[in-house]
Every structure is written in C-alpha cells, then in structure tokens.
Image: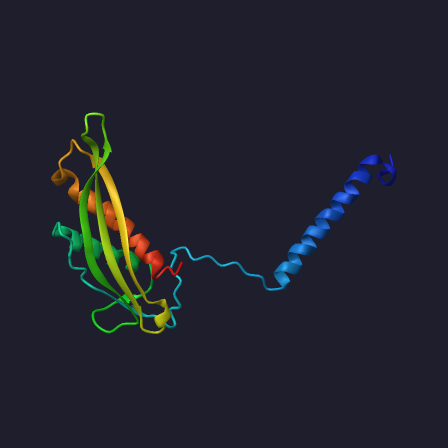
Length: 184
C-alpha cells in the first residue's frame, strides 16, 4: 500500500501543517519577548523605591467602645503587611505610613421576624485610614472602610464578640491593603 496515495495521508498532511504553524506562531511570540508576570501577594510596590512603612495605633473614637478591638486590628494589619510585602515596619519617618482611627462600632437588628423581634444582630466596624506615600503624594488616601458580621440574636454579644472582631478586622485589613499597598 502506498501511503502517498492513501486517503489517510491526505488527512494527516493538513494536521502536520497545523502543528507546524502552531509551533512557528508560539516561537514568534516567544522571540518578540512577550512576558507574563504574576504577583502572588497582591502588592504593587517597587522595592527599589519603598523600603519602610509605619503603622499607627488606630485609637477607638466610636460611641461604643470594645477596648481589645484596637490591638486586634493593629496586630492583624501589621501581620498582613509583613506576610504580603517586603517592607520593614518602623516607628517614625518612613517611605509609607498608615494611620487612622476606629470610628464606628455599632450593633443593629437584622432579619426581623413576624413577632417584631430581630432574629439576627449585625456588628459593624468602621475604620478611617490615612495612607501617606512620601515618594508620590498622588497615592495618598484618606478613606473610611467598613465591614460587618451578623450573629443570632439568641447569642450574647460577649460570647461572640472576640471572634466577630477578629473576622471583621481581617476583612478590613484586606480592604485597606488592596486600596493602599495593593494599588488596585
């Protein structure tokens, strides 16, 4: 059987051309120097320019005060920055600065039932953040961030408060990081 005259060879010949064209296309793309880069931490910083950051204390200025919240929030913010950037955290003058205050800590009823009682309660925390970039002032931000968690009204706030504050702090820190250091 002569393969040059067979119907199978006629089918294979265009496939070979397609493979050859695909290889040539990929080679030309690679030759032109096309690169793809990923940043797994989300930070968009030039570490040749930015080396240090200072993180303020974030005092509580809310009408309702839960004292451990301030420490929980600041530690979460510092840890997140340390885990996701190569910036060195320092006190005083730095390339970048994040400071602010906890401006809101409130409870509100949610999911009111037919007997006019709330089956859920919402804990909302708001944080005002002032982000200062000493190298490029157009990156400066003065913004308020809020996050909340709902819990069953049958639970006492004192029983769930620590866990809720931790969850809300983590969400707030991610929002703040993305708006400042993440440069989204």
